[in-house]
Amino acid sequence: MSKALIIQREFLTFGFLLLLCALVAMPALAGEAGRIKVSKGEVQIVRDGKRLPAPVGAMIQARDTVKTGPNGSVGITFQDNSLLSAGPDSELVIERFVFDSTTHKGEFDTALKKGTLAVVSGKIVKQSPEAMRVKTPAAIMGVRGTEFVVKVDDSVTK
Amino acid sequence: MRFPNAPVILAIGLVLGACAQQPPSGNAPDPIEREAIRTGDQKGIRTDEGEAIHTVRSRAPNELVVLLPKGNGSVGAVVVRSAGSRPLVLDKPYAAARIDGAGRLQPFTYDADLAKKEFSATLTALPARPITFLLYFLEAKDEPTPESEREVERIFADIAGRPYPEILVIGHTDAVGSMEYNDQLSLQRAQRVREDLTHRGVPGKYIAIAGRGKREPVVRTAADAPEPMNRRVEIIVR
Image (cartoon, rainbow over all chains, first blue to last red):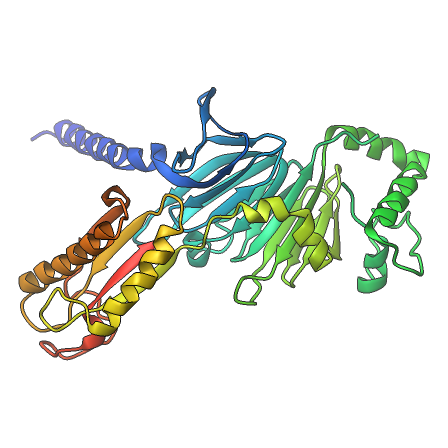
C-alpha cells in the first residue's frame, strides 16, 4: 500500500472518530441541565429567542435564560445537585452546564444580569473547586463549595 | 440598594479607595440611616474622580455577594474577581463584598438577620437539598430487613413532600455468589423498592433503577463472604 493511501486511511479513521465523539457529546451539550422545582408568580424560560412557561418540572438546558417578574421566584436543581434560586425581577442565564455523572467533572457557568440569586454548590465543585462560576456585570465569583447569595441592582444611580 | 461601608472600616480596618471618601462614624446607624449616609457621601465625591464614577455607575449596577453558613454550620468559600481589584476570598459566615460599577470590591461583614430578610424571597425558592436514603436487605432476597421496612414510610414522606422528585434507585449485593447472580439480585432489589414507592403513590415516571451487583461494596470483604452492610439499595432523590 502506498504511503499516500495509508495517510488517507488514517485521515478517514480520524474523521470517523471525530464524528463519533461529536455524536456522543451532542446529547450532553443540548440535553437536560436541571429541573425547575419551585416556580412562584411570573417565571419564564427564554430558549432560542422563544419565551416558554416555567412550571415545576420544566427542564432547564444550557443557554437558557430564566426570568422572574415582580412577584416571581424560581428554584432549579441541577444534575450535579447544585441548587440555584432567583428572587423577584431577576434575570439568570445558564451559560454552560457540562457534567460527567461518573467522574463528577464538569463546568458550570451562570450569569446574573439583574436581581437576586442564591447558590448551593454541588458535585462539580466538590470534584473541581471553581469549576462553577457565577458572573455578574462587574465580577466573577469562583465557587469553592458553599452557599451564598448575590444581588445585582440595575436601577440607575441618580 | 447600597450597603454600609463605615462599619467595615471600623471592623476590618481596611481602607480601600472606594470607601476612603467616607469618614468612619463613631456610632453604627441602622441600615436605612446608613444608606442615607452612603447616598449623601456619593453626592460629595470629589469632582475629579466623581465624574468618572458617576458615568460608570449610570451604566453598571451595584452588586453584593454574601457568603452564608451551610446547613450543617460549616462554611465554604467564594473567590470574587473583578477588573477593578485583587481577587477577594470570602470564607467566613456572612463575609460579604460590594462591587461598584467600576469593579471595585469592598469587603465587609453583612448582618445575619438583614441577609435573611433581604434575600428571603430568594432563599425561600431554593429547592430541597438532594438526599440519599439506604435500605438494607435480607440475605439472598429482595426483601428489606424489618428495620429498613420501617424506614420506608419516612422515606416516602420525604419524597412525597418534594415537587417533581427525580429518584434513582440503585441495588447492591454482598459478595456471595457469581457476578451474574448478584447483578440479577441487585436489580430485583431496586425493582422491589420502585414497586414499594409506586404503591405508595410516587409516579413511576420519576423513578429510574439500576443494579450494580457486588461491584460497589461499602465494606470490603473476602470473596463470597456475606456482609449485611453491602446488601442495600440506595435511593437518591433530587
